[in-house]
Image (cartoon, rainbow, N blue to C red; front, top):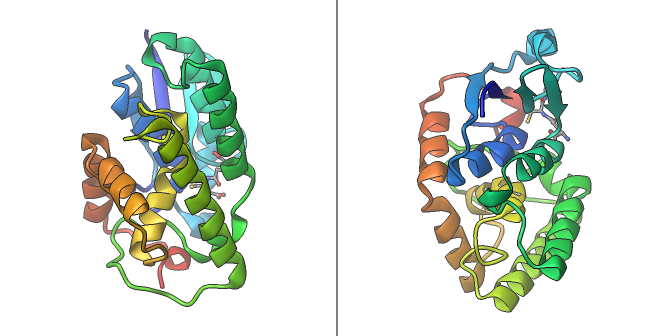
Length: 215
Ligand SMILES: N[C@@H](CCC(=O)N[C@@H](CS)C(=O)NCC(=O)O)C(=O)O
């Protein structure tokens, strides 16, 4: 497979980039990474060189351009069916798509108040009731999936569901939002992945600061 390029931004902060990136690494897909750092002062105008909506992530496959993290993951799942990006079982796949869609279209309070940040030292923070409700709902989803499948990932093997929730693992940890043994175990599984360690180390090594993602 030639000419597959994933355009991403800062590993410290870019939660949307992290989703397809971690799936590509875990499944060892032949996709080249192209890094382009944030420049919010300019409105990230340089993203227009490769992105139709001025955002990352974006996947280029030859002349084809696919944007939006979930659309990219769906395309990769079709391009590499043997990778098992979605669960094999029809009912499990439907459930995985349901929770992925809930993540993609929801939890805005958590995303706005608690940005992903690979360098933040874990410390609790005052959050709104809306964030607490988001955290409770995500905890409920994860616990139900892990109970039903037995883990170690949400649907047994690593899938798009784990990739889509990966930034939430970081948010829960750095803002100390959950204290639950099942969530701790799942967090250890995710943060123990070589792919996770590689992304985190690269994020920590970045010196650029995005003020609105720091507190
Ligand atoms: N729904 C989109 C969101 C993409 C998005 O918000 N990306 C952020 C980076 S994590 C971005 O490019 N921000 C730059 C900007 O909006 O100027 C997705 O899933 O890919």
